Length: 406
Image 1 (cartoon, helix red, strand yellow):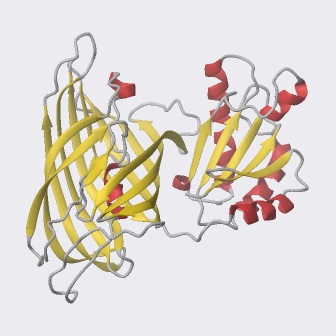
Image 2 (cartoon, helix red, strand yellow):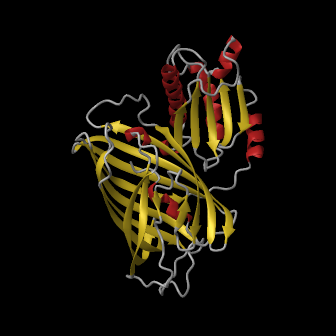
Image 3 (cartoon, helix red, strand yellow):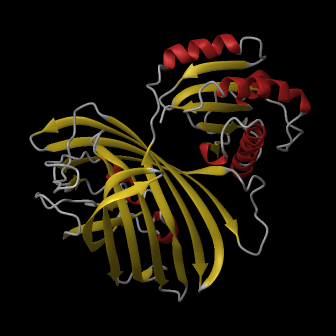
């Protein structure tokens, strides 16, 4: 339920006048060409008819770029990538790699934002999920002062309820300037954000739909005055959805987000270096992609029709692990691919399980912590060769390890 939530607040710049202990005036302060990398994590419990049914962990990676400044407004483009692992309570997981994060959603977005934080965004965009938070009153604030402003939550209900358009829930957010607060051992000027939602949507005959939605969000935002942007935020939230079929779904949890620092990625130079290092690995290649640097292992061997990695493949992955350790600031995507055989559902499942087996092995080598490796199965959707020859099918049976730029 909670995915990218209010991580968008981390784009904001902070302008202040006066000394640190005196009044601050908050406003957005963008520069054309600025780029931000944001990591958001969510831990939530999911209740079905008031019984705890699932526990979910979600990792959101958000790449932002300021593409244009016009007057007091900035145009921003964004890519939101979400990965998730969900564990049933009181039952066994159907996912063989239950401890791994699986790719969930990708969203593109573009919007305008003025210096006080108000956004202008097209109706086709689902992200950011929380909009016009934070916004500022345009005046100096002393610790303890409060202000209020309208905001909106936007949900993607296409998969769950067949609602094709972004689903909007308005609210009023209440703010309090808190003065100095600590985040991970460093003090920042901070403010709280609190809002409640209540909505009774129109009926949708013949479909299961949300009949009533209630929610609450309480946040603290920490601002980095040296860098002119927010350092982090943390949130406690609760959302209850009463459905037209009588079921009740409730989401309770905690989220946090922070700007992730990483040096610029010279993809061409990195690819050249990695190509030299993998030159002795059979059927291995490297290429530059929009996402980062892709290391492709063609015809990686598993037991027939399974995700059991053969021992003969482990030396290859040991070498890959050594390479990945040289780029510790970058997260990893492990993608599985199959040849065109069997059913589409079977291919997708097998490719995901094989990606999971490779990711699990890399985790055993401590190349990253679990939340920094994401797996994704593609089935036969992205062939690199024709599937009408054994050679082509061999090339298509591959695992690709991407060192992500964002």
